[in-house]
Length: 546
Image 1 (cartoon, one colour):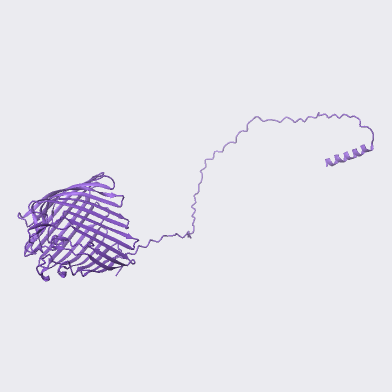
Image 2: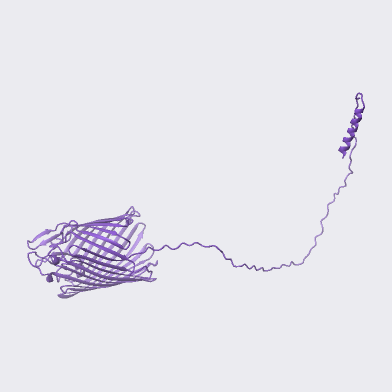
């Protein structure tokens, strides 16, 4: 508003100036600043305000506590937890039926039945028939057959395992090592062995306890076609007790009570006790003990008690390779059972004598290379008394007598083993043994080889075709020809076999066996040539239950 008034005054003054004419006169404007603004002096207070007096109240303070209960409704989560199902166990076809036929009028039938998976028990049944009606000499006069039936089972408890076996084995062969110029009648040369065997087992389970034991009672009965009989009751016991992680005690024992009847009746007893202590210190493991043996054998002198030193030392060169060595002594049991299993052509009423291994020294190296390869090589040097050998009967060369070196026999063995396992694709194993004997009262180590070599392998092609093969050689076997009264060295044994299995499905497969491919009629025992080339073809059917 003030601005408008000033503006209007200027406009009026300008109009007045426009009406006047003439010259502008000089003028002087003087502005004076002579007005002073003065404020009255302010009064100041220099005295402090005294604080208010405090009231001393001695009254007690009152506190009140209250409990507050908050009740919440139940939480009902709507989250779904994803669970992984247990993987299904692969179906196992552990039971199978197998049948095959081949030349020499051969037949093969086999069945195996297993229990299903069970944590409390297991059982199995095994039956087998294998026969060749014809052989290398006079056809049926050299035929052979074998039958087997077996049942076994186990029951698993918290602290121990209870098991048992019942087996029957029947074998038939012929004494076909007779002179071919003489006619032989089959009923006079036929030999049969019937063996019944039963045993039981009681052992503790691995529950982390420091004490373990296993006891195995057994009974067997053997009878041949010529009224020879032998019954045997046996008992094995083994126990270990760990004092700490480095020291333990072991105790083993064995009892054998046999009765042999073959023209005369003979009772033979054998009892062994092996106490020992074992300890380890770093890479060194040591076992030291005794072997105490009592036996009443047929050798003159009656009852005998033997005391042997027993011990072993193992040193780990690294995690995979170890060297070992030891000393031992023992009575090696010889009875009708063991001799028949080794040579089924033995004579009647043969003498039975246990072999006394008075002292044995052994050592070697063992280990694994590259995880898939295993090696083991070593030697043993033993002194024996009454080591047995087989020799043809001078009166009937088709049968074998048993002779014993009643003096001192030194037996040396050097061996080497090699194995490979490449995750179920390729497997192989090889072993070589060399033997040497120094005899005192026997001329030669009759029918004992000086070397053995075995080689076996298998190859799995795409889980469809399985190839397997084995080579077995043996040589240096000496025999006695009583017609010429000369020593005879048998030709080396070379036995090469092939087998092909074709898996048509998980349950059905076909097999083709080629045995003695080189068709060598080699002799393991003098006058007993083996069959030549043998071919067998057959089927296998696997199933999971009856």
